[in-house]
Length: 178
Image 1 (cartoon, one colour):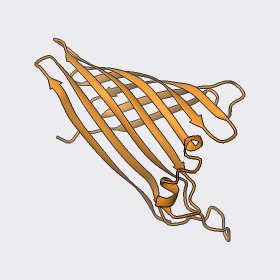
Image 2: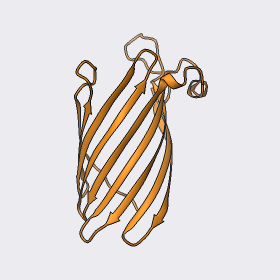
Image 3: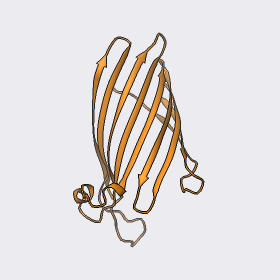
Image 4: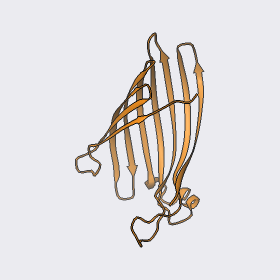
């Protein structure tokens, strides 16, 4: 099986002064596009579940003597696509459109110095499906030192929900290309 994603991102400064700026970004993504896959030997092949996402964010940045502060509110709308039919027909079918949407909103505050940064994150997710509405919060922290980064995220749900109190941890490398 072979799968890939395709996405677009557009960003623009609304204003930029010596010590502060405000920028706007909007993006769209289509993921898990590809061939059918079989999870077990001799099982029927199926498409991976795909998703169409669109989102936007504003970033207010303020520079101080020894650090930079960035505040970023964001919103994202996802439409999950379980394909038994043509991808574009599934993506843009308006029958039962609202029950298949997931709404995500969040905020990040990031403190940056020359070699490290710390980001605090929080948000809410609302998943609207035909038989249930799921609403939960998220919280997280990121620490980056030079090219090394550590992320911790916590999903805050009711105890009877399947993702209740899930913790995600990742360690990685990042390099910004100029």
